[in-house]
Figure 1 (cartoon, helix red, strand yellow):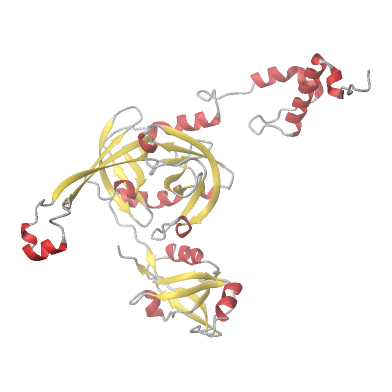
Figure 2 (cartoon, rainbow, N blue to C red):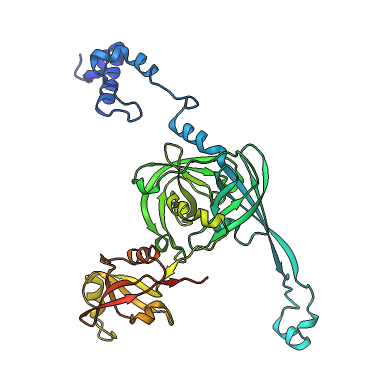
Length: 403
């Protein structure tokens, strides 16, 4: 070998056949070190490599699940997922740039304005899923709210007229009834058992594309409605990166077993891969009331609040123009007390710091809100507050929130 030649790297000397053997051994070793969670109890030692193909071929596969657990889950829930089309009548007048000028209206009067109000039909679309064989369908309130006509189409092509039985705006849930018998039913899971990282499968009709399935994971749990950007709701959401688009609203979020764990509801328009679903346990707790046409009660106490930490309080207290000094503690700061509310009647004041409610430590507004939401109307709740350096205990009785 001349001095100008560079020595071959060791793997270049091995040869093609030997290299193939090395790659196979390395691949099998990798499978042994990082086992496939979908193929349990397989060991890939050198003595067993010969039987690898036979072992893989003998893995039991359930009927209808010849491709993946995703396909099996979709087959289980898919027939019960429906498309919901709505029609809403809107009365409005088309504006005229000349006749709607304030000078013209003031000079000639309103009665001679042209273009009287006309009726327009606004179309909407969403998803839902059947939970009882006689035709009880769960969807989002915002899918069917205000609709004059609701049409429900099953995956097999059958079409039914839908009757909106009940709507709860605060939880964004609704029940629609269709007339049918022995209809396919979506199995309901248990959202309280979810963990971050679990599989999440979104099924629905996004953008009018029927029977669309997307896959992701549970990104986080108990995401408050305020964090999602819809503070007028009373919800803690499941966050997922499974793709959710307009038209998915009301459709099911499904686990790896094909059970509904949530109702797809919202997305963040300024982000990708961030969607939100209502936990199915919330829907299970009120679906029967909605199906009977009953109003769902939501307790409230009537305060606006923000989280407080020692650092926030310390920064606030530095301002010489502050109306009062804040205790440098963790809690919830009351920034407004609504007139004639239960909180007003109980003696709450702006600047109170709530540290405890009904024996539970309070550090976030979401904690306080959940305790109130899960209380009973008229039930006495003991609330510990810090006010002006002193601790006080107030008793508040939640009232029913009016729409």
